[in-house]
Image 1 (cartoon, rainbow, N blue to C red):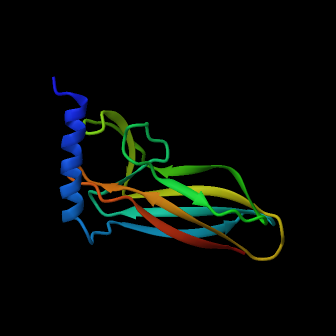
Image 2 (cartoon, rainbow, N blue to C red):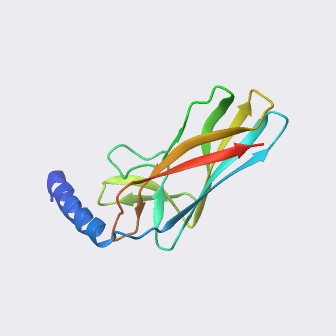
Image 3 (spheres, helix red, strand yellow):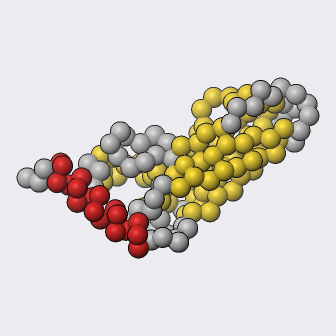
Length: 153
């Protein structure tokens, strides 16, 4: 049986060479929109569209697995987050030998949806960033961060 440390070392070597050869590739396109639900509530959509065969990972990925997508919202006293950021898309759950865990990921299109309440009636913006890792079965790109600014009006 192959040891876990040997597999980790092998994965790091493969990952390093994949990253070096994949520089300049940008297989994920992000869009940031908002929709007014009522006088003070908005739905913010953070949408990712991936080229085939690329994927990005769920926010809810097991420890020790691939880097999960992380969404951070900058603090704004006039905007209150309502609940957790939800994921809308065709979630794929599959055991990945490289990570030795069940990985949760999306291919094609996924929307991360956050409801917010605006405290003031003036136009506001919600700012933040998305950190994600894009992979195929053969390679992973270095984790990337995308900044956003969505108008709430």
